[in-house]
Image (cartoon, rainbow, N blue to C red; front, side, top):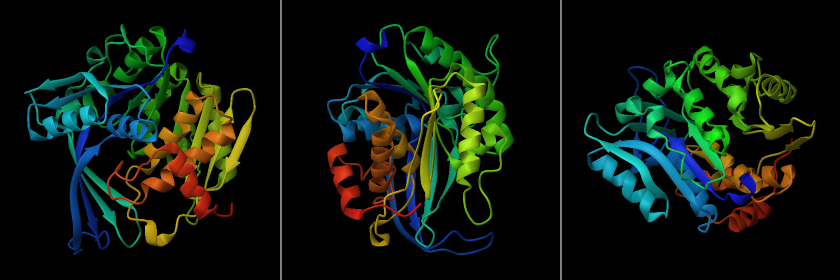
Length: 339
């Protein structure tokens, strides 16, 4: 029974992020100035695991991943262990280098550009996931599009993601799928067969549009009504209890029983913002912490916004996250933007 379970199991992308702060993102043959460079853990499995432990160090967190027998792999495993994450299912291989990502954050726009090397990520398979002994409540799985084997058909399943999700739910876990900024048609193709095996879906405005086949992002702004419509289409196509959509202008959550909540983002001062790398993972961490603790949907959205805003104070994905009470206090001090 899920009521006897507590905590989060994150599975999928563990990569070494080489975070670089630059003056702006140049066009081809262009030139930009580099200001900062830092190595941190990255990827959906890493980010949510670290975020959750920083929101609440007492929260049990386990992880499943595959890293190389190299300096980056040792760094990622040491980072997880230092945070108190159970790494018994973080496997090590000498068949490839640890997956890594060059993550550039523009000081001009605060937008991020990622260039990744698949490395060990291409070798991760459903067989690396063992749910037989875990007592965690939720599986946070990602990222479709950057794991070659999981993206491919697996035995009788349309892809490896479906195989993992089915295995997790059979073992009593509730499931969520984190997405990456890949080409829309590929995202839709990979995610569609996963929807019947998900309990939650927390995505951004572009991702929900790709999944539902709805234009959600215009030239000037994100269409809030289109996002809600797309979320309802996704609900109809899947087994989710709730779909949440976030973007810089708002967040909206809809449930299968018809409940809807919409909240504006936190008005973090421009002077506090260093980069948006990991903000989506931070939003998901805040949202899931509230869900885990039985909060109302509006309270969950409020902490999700607060955690995402707090994360903007670092060029790394997780470096600025603080305990959930402090996230909410910062958000209260900064106030809300208008919808």
